[in-house]
Length: 327
Ligand code: ADE
Ligand code: ZN
Image 1 (cartoon, rainbow, N blue to C red):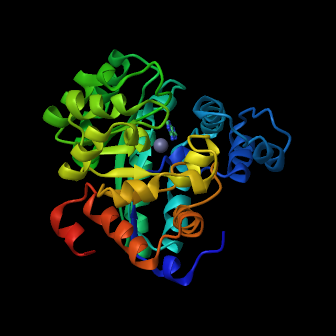
Image 2 (cartoon, rainbow, N blue to C red):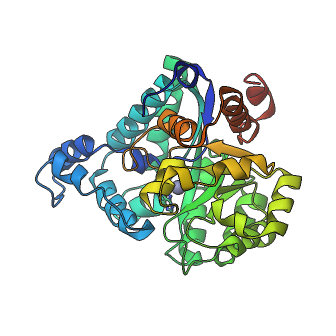
């Protein structure tokens, strides 16, 4: 979808994006060669051709394959820097991004290799583009809570440079309350903000449980909250932000097509809605493509898109003065 000049120039924050989901097929093949990692596709084109998903799990299988090419600190730096440089072109002025440390620790990579190099890329992007970055660590919800708790212990040395706790991985079979202690530890012990993927494949009851059991500050996706009118009223009243990812939702068949997406109805019901790319290399676009897709399919006006971009700054975890400078 062509990007309108208004969208291209609109300052925005991106709040829901997985760094490993920004690895382009060409980068995956290049790093595979450099690091001697076997990727069972003959070329970047062949890998890209496999990006046709039937549901969340079919995407996760490729996502977990792709991230195995990340081996060295330089790999984590390059991945982060490439995303931030690309986001700066989309006039992203602040990015809060997810990393899944468990997917790397399990392969024998040290926590410092992952975290220090991502933070170094944030520092350099701030110099290069004036854009700010925040790192959210994601629990992989297919693993048990003990695994999540030990990851949090390993992150203690970086507690002041990490802004939040989130999740990734399969929602079905892994309800929010599974991670009650991990979320309490993040909030009370580490002093972080919290968010969780809920209501992407799971129902509105997953969103309720995330609010009640985990007391999260944001909900990632959350689009299935529409099935519960009481929950919709609660979300409008409390103003809890939803990080919606329109292109992701179509690629993973949460909705059959963009005309059928409920983002306009959620916005008109008074919920605090933001627009994000989720896994831009897998889902056909960076953040501006997501704004353009809803503009074209659902007739969002420039004034409405401006409101969504404003929501992205007010919903950010960044501290008061840094945030207010964007408003
Ligand atoms: N990991 C990366 N993107 C994800 C998504 N949209 N849902 C769950 N896990 C993910
Ligand atoms: Zn996501």
